Length: 425
Ligand SMILES: [Ca+2]
Image (tube, rainbow, N blue to C red):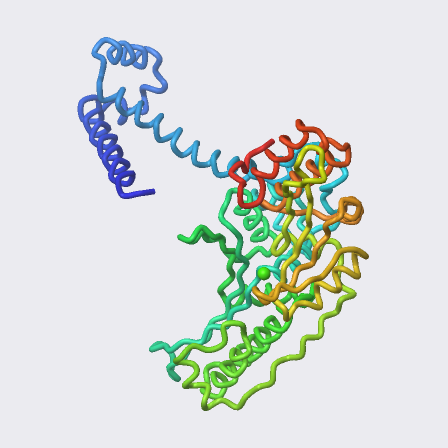
């Protein structure tokens, strides 16, 4: 609510109060005497009096009261419907939904059944492995060490966990759902048009740790999680209240992706280095729900129309599923290839990244069958639905006709970065 709104609200409230005061002073009987409610005669005469005299103040009070009733009623309704409106399931075209996007049978660890919001999200049944897969792609375990005047030793330690996504209504709904899943944290929109799901309090971070102990990470993020857990242990033992503990934490933080800033680098000179945990993922944990989360974060469903001299129409439609990783998680891409029994892993020398790609229509069809138990969320689910719709057209050879090509062109333009429609039903 902006300043102008607040100003108008206060003004309206003042008008309501002054009108009320005027009525009570001119017609004290209405408000003071309980008799009127028991006496039909007086009540009727009062009504006549009001009708004849046309008490302006009474009308004003009624009007403002109705306004306020609707204002608060509206707020309550909008809040619940808003979440409902952006439920991903309801937005996926039925054609793509059938057989492709089924919700999983597994229930999340815990949901607060008494919570109204939980009821809204109940049927979505987010899979715990999805959360781990998403975190492997776009999660962050952050260790913050900063100078503080509030502690005896002059330093304070904070732990954070966050997930990031582009800001749009469906991704917002996805993060609200993840928030429900954990039962902690908050969803925040940044000025740069990203949204964060973030957990900051120490107590809540313990809940996050529990999840990732039960459903372990697979990418190199596992190492950052282990460093983060070591800091949790230090804090549990209250060692972070001593300088020795702070130095240990700084030595651990030195291995994190953001490493140390100038201030901490000075402090780090006093540290005894601690070796980084070895990256030892258990690839047996790789499953379709994890893959869905991972693709949701770092995957891409591409639909391209390229000029082609060999094709009669002069254009060729192509589909591609792609997952991009930094080189330290390259092994994960090879494991995904092994798990799916298809695809290619290739290096992007310029970006220092690697890609896992499935490019053949036949293999994409096979992928869809393997993937049918999994469920995507947010904007990625809409992109996947479009992707499946185009695949369906191509399976029916529609892309060999001008009408089909223009249909596919339209789908392609409206997905991924070109997406402006988040509300299809
Ligand atoms: Ca990533």
